Image 1 (cartoon, helix red, strand yellow):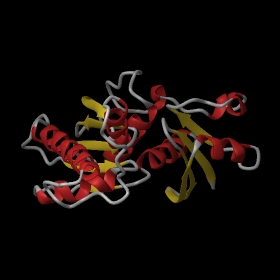
Image 2: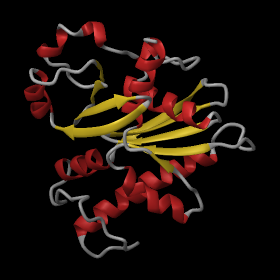
Image 3: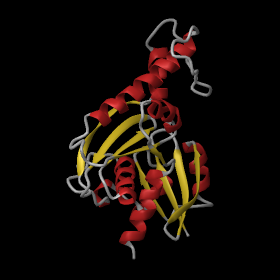
Image 4: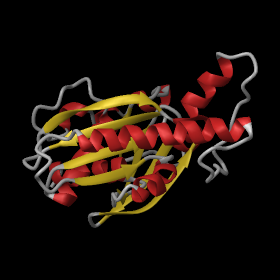
Length: 229
């Protein structure tokens, strides 16, 4: 078994990889993650967030975007986004649009041959709500814990969460409609902490996304297994 760590922008993601599968995953804050490092150091890790000093000595087991085998992949693409896109393509073996709903909402296209075809980025749900609260005089800090199912909420906090979620669903729908070669059999994948917020809205529009909460961690495990055989 190999212990994996992916340092995101907002959270740390731990996973145990065994026999080609992610058998367990855990998520926590950076503070919690640093406290675990001494007792449970990762065998392999990747990062888009701040790397603590305790991991600097373990650079030999750090994986980067340069090692993700997607054709035409720019090195400026975040390693979490690259790993998730590569893993989805590996599982689908057909063109994929991968939607990662985390701190940022990223849309990433991979063609049927495993080539990176570009993507889109926008602020994620909580980042949008935080910006609205901080940049206005009266809007509250809305919560996404129990988002409303109403299309036109009367309460301001629910109107905020509804507007943000509907906007993100719309961005995904627009992106899927504008995918290249739409006559091909594309698969839509959802991952990230806020993926569940988008699922129902996309299904109501006739799409059937595949949801995989640990897609980037799975990609890291798959990559390690493939390159270290």
